[in-house]
Length: 128
Image (cartoon, rainbow, N blue to C red; front, side, top):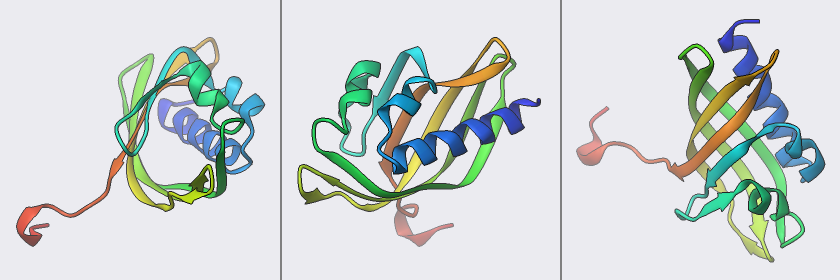
C-alpha cells in the first residue's frame, strides 16, 4: 500500500472514530508519542486526547476533505479541511478548520503521530 493510500485510509478511520466519539477505536490509531493541538492552540497528550469524550467532548459530525498527502518514506504529512459539529461541555465548537496530520509507518500500517487543528481563513487582502 502506498503512503498516499495508507494515510487516506488512516484519516478516514480517524474521522469515523472521532464522529462516533470512540476512544477505543482512536487508541488503535494514535502513535505512542501522539500530540494533538486543538483549534484554540492547546496541546493534548495521547492520553488526554483519548479522554476528551469522557470529559465532555461530543462530536455529532466530523469529516476531513481536500486532503493532500506528502510522502517522506516512513512518515507522511496530510493537509486538509476539517468540518465538525462539536460541543465541549455543552458549548458549541462547530466550524471548519485547517487540519495538518503527521502519520508514521509502524509495521504494515500507519498511525497518527500528530494532529494540528487551526483556523481556516483566506489570505490577507483577499488574495488567492
